[in-house]
Length: 78
Image (cartoon, rainbow, N blue to C red; front, side, top):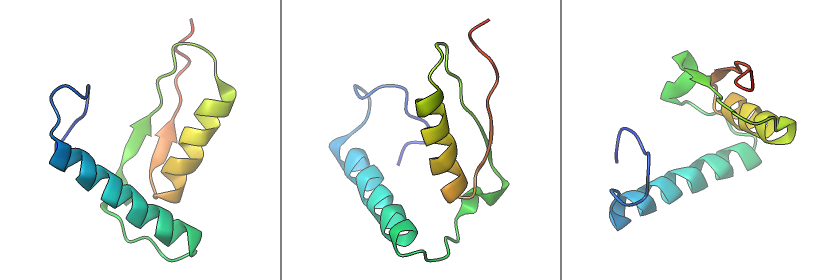
């Protein structure tokens, strides 16, 4: 699986399927209220929104928190 993803032109079909499989695993765990033992507990994610989008920002925050990731949201619209 790639360490970063900036566009879909450089990613293989196999890597895309791995990402979708991992997403399905996390969705199942979250839907079943099972404990997620993820390596993400020590991660901090920055949400960079260059245009205001409260609903999208909160959606990203909630998804990250469900995976145990802490988030920061700098104001990028200035």
